[in-house]
Amino acid sequence: MRAPTFAYHGIAASELRAARAVGEAEELAEHRFVQLPDLRESGDIPGATFGSLPKTYIPLRNAVFYSLAAAFAEEVRADVIVGGHNRDDLQVFPDTSRSFFNAMQRALRKGSPVLERRRIRLLRPLQYRSKERVISLAASLDVPFGLTWSCHREGDRHCWNCDGCRARIEAFKAAGIRDPLFAGRHHRPFRYPSA
Ligand SMILES: [Zn+2]
Image (cartoon, rainbow, N blue to C red):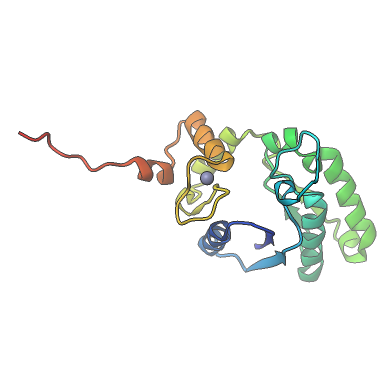
């Protein structure tokens, strides 16, 4: 298995470190870090308006990411590209819709004889699962939660206050699963009451 990680403008170094750690834990055959310093979240684009989309929206992110992933796939003769978009993403971002991915898959095959011959497929196995159900599945697969990163801010630890952190707390809570990172933050050593 091979994977790209896209380092767009302003991505937290902590997130890149976590991606590298997860890649190592999964023993990827290749983990490619693609530098995209000009690709910015809408919240980092002065004066831009994107309607009701959240400030984490990146204009046409998935058209860019999947094109680059497909170039990688063409190079290494892969048959499938797997994306981790969940049901919650589909409700917010237009470039995670089924119609977008169907059109993207057609465009990639049209654009590359290799990908056409290999019938490249864009798979999204989590697309019908909420975040909470993704957490449940991940727990059953022994995903190393302790290596993962959800915070939008820079630092060695999650801030537990940004949108990414709050969504993580809620998803683990709804799934009824202990988050080793969050639990660690709140752990206080037991002390006998003083006499
Ligand atoms: Zn945070």
